[in-house]
Image (cartoon, rainbow over all chains, first blue to last red; front, top):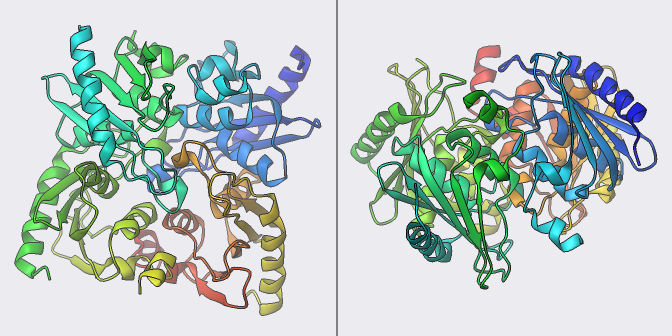
Length: 136
Length: 136
Length: 136
Length: 136
């Protein structure tokens, strides 16, 4: 179980990495920090493209970078959107990629640069996910 | 409001179009039928690619085809997965594209080739969606 | 073989459909017109998303819409970018989807709103494509 | 300028990382190794998804992981596909993402597990790329 202090620390890593986002088109930077099962933290940012559809989000960047290091199971993910005051939830595509590697109870935190913070889970973000059904 | 008869009819169109899916890699065919605000139905299938990441799902195919006809608002969507017995929910990417054009109360039905049928909404499929918040 | 008059007509359809693009984020509209093997023309536009990565380009929209109609072979594609003066070539993702359904000799025309026009082929746009090799 | 020895070494890293690919659906593993401008090598693998369209290729994985480390300019990329004998070129989507960060003269090497090896450039893989035109 990941406690609140660990989530705070993870979110802090997300907030720091967000500054490295490549977001020249949207000017909307996103950072993600992923806690791997051995305690390693892997981070990601959004990487945009002039063909908008080729943009990769921060969450998917982090998950894929971790997969390349051989990780397949994760304990938590935190997402920072420093260019919005309110929290902005992960897009559906990222929820789908989370669902490939994370069970429904994995905690997800996201926040903007304001005080509001959302604490939810992969299962709440991706209800009616068939793989979760299969895993039960 | 879309009634149950209309949803039955819409699902029937999804089931029929699924047979035209281009799914040589997964062998998992999907069909989608989208009810536009003037009553027009636009259908879509999954179109796979040997570079798996370039695959387009049936739901996104239908929504984008409808957008090209000038539609921007939709009343309902139905999804058929004839190669599974159980219903298989739309992937996160499709939920995201639904969220761009459909408000949270729009009905979504999906079913496999068995008797079970899921009747839900765009809002239930994509909780914590920032645009929905903004629209309230 | 598709002659120049047919390409002119096809491009004209691309230019007209581009006006229906859903491009609120980039303000860069694209239209595509695809000539199917029986003479049917299927059109597409770019359909953007607030999660930029979920954007579908005009070319892929047209090809997937045609696939949903049961078409698998195409004779030509034309692409119009009315918000640029110079021609803007199809992005790599669209070249990849073209390559799934079109052999290397299929003609591609693209143009902006200026006089310059590029006439090329799928094979020139996607060199070193393994499927083309296999098809030889 | 990257010499042949450096390309050999880079390809060797691509070949090794390919073994960490997450490719349960295609069984086709890909590894990529990217040489950053300060000499750092960042690697990536393909990361598939049960919704095929959410798959990320090895090349994009490596480029986005490097972007998250703050890199924006790269000197070379090598790609290994150990499950094919013949070389398999990068898909169009990856060519597009290469084109965002790499100029046309950047060397690209790809090879399967056989003796054949392709040595090309980003410009040859993505001709008629508008950004390259602008950069000239």
